[in-house]
Amino acid sequence: MEFQMSMTQQAVTTALPAIEFFSSVVEISPGARAKAWSMPALSDAVRRGRGALAGLIRGEGLYPVFQPIVSLRDGSIYAHEALIRGPQDTALHTPDALLTAAAQEGLNFEFENHCVIAACQRWGKLVEAGRLFVNISAEVLVQILEQYGRAALLELINGFGVLPRKLVFEITEYQRVADMDHLARMVRELRSAGVAIALDDFGDGRSSLRLWSQVRPEFVKIDKYFTKNLSQHADKLKTIQALQQIGALFETALVAEGIETEDDLRLLRDLGIDCGQGYFLGRPALLPREQIEAGALAVMRDRRVAVFPELRRASQSGVLSRIALLDAPTVTPSTSNDELVALFLNHKKLHAVAVVDGHRPVGIINRSNFMNEYSKLYYREVWGKKPCLVHANLASRLIERNHNVDELIGILTSDDQRYLTDGFIVTENGRYVGLGTGEQLVRSVTETRIEAARHANPLTFLPGNIPISQHIERLLAGGAEFVACYADLNNFKPFNDQYGYWRGDEMIRLLARLALAHCDPKRDFVGHVGGDDFIILYQSADWQQQCQNIVSEFAARAVDLFDEAARAAGGIHAEDRHGVSRFFPLTTLSIGAVRIRSDEYASAEQVASVAARAKHEAKTARSGFLVLESAEVSSC
Image (cartoon, rainbow, N blue to C red):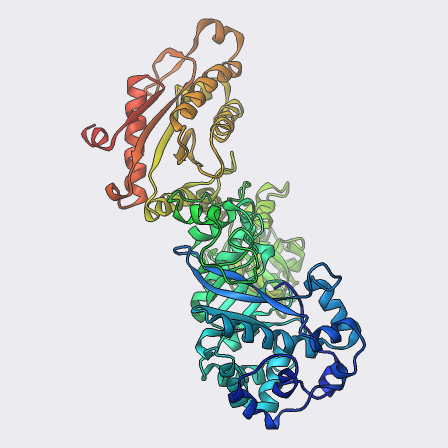
């Protein structure tokens, strides 16, 4: 929204300006004027006001402009939003200046009402077929409905020739709504007459999820903070995807505000956002638009698919809420050693036991260590009746049930390896709930790391298998023609065995850097399948030249990762997969490419499969770069 409207305490206590007031400053049809007998006259604040804004309101100096709201499915104009302006080339032309003047003159409430009426009057005269979005604060909307009722408001709207079903009241929440339940009742009453509701600037810190849930608006406008430079921010993308899930739950259409670039429009279109608004689509104008800007229309007609921004670093943390817990019995600080040995004998698989004071864990006792002590000569006679707390590790590791991976990795890397043998105590809100074992710990951390790698490879930070599949599915669904390239290193295993994993990782990172350098990040997608296998999905027209550049530059730069003797010999002697020593040439790169048409493939799995076959043919042909058509791949 381009201007903010709020209601001061003075405006609350003064008489509301309505039909009688507006009949003195704008033209209202006779039908609407006939129903105005119950409305108060022009407020003293406007009638006697000496400020510039009061003069503009009295003299019809304010006027609406209209900005298009565009369907992101086909680029058609779905609606227009009315925005208020002051006289051109004056200090009160801009929305910010009008807001400031309204606050200074105490006319916030009157100013807001005037904006609504001016917008409806102008829209009715234009006889437009589309919908009209009109801004109104929650407080003003409630007060109008309370004092005048739905019928009077609808009579006013109809008097301007505006159909209620074509009107959308765009609620601005610039002051916290005191009674959301009451607002929801008022909105239901208004909706029953056909008027739709939108929430403005959702996500700016003032619009709340509770308001969305209670009002159940037909539209929610996403604040421009989340759409600006969206193509460069993966975190904003994730936020909008979360809003889409909420919108689906509440059956609400989303409108993305602040669209100013081709890249952001393409991405929002491919995300499946319902509507968009912004300068790139169309600026506010005196007359409603019939078509969006040419550049925006070209994007909407372009079948190329946006490359979603990905978090470039693999997540090193996460929640392991599903780790298996051992529901083990506990002892207290006063439990005797004799009682503890009986507990261990009754639970033969129990590796340790937690010492718990009430619900609070204070330590852990390792079974093996305790049983070794208890079996010593005269131990039972001397220590059997004494508390077992003396055998407890009072520095035991406590992990909350919804614990973080980093906490568990700390156990694995700790110098105190008792954590692996004793296990760890699991709590929930500080209360004992069970034990975890070292074996469970290793398994859980490993599974979490594998799952994280499917999203982002931890070596190159490139998208993993899941984002690769998702991007292919979007390419197919969008009907885009693209090229699937599968890249793989030749003779990489002998190199890795000869020089170790560190140099092997350097070679893989070299390939990742070259792949990214020879792609257009707005058009092309680079993914790391795993190991030395990469997928590149090209929509750029010069994809063949870029692939050839990757192959040639890799060959030139990978040589530096070999030692001088290997460079002079042109390769290394190493064992093959069967343990036989033989000569391997220097590591090179093979890329197999397949042109993909959406009508030939039904899933990401099929595309990945044919790309892998093309890669195999490229390696077999030792050509470095090989392009196959779909028919050729099928015959391989």
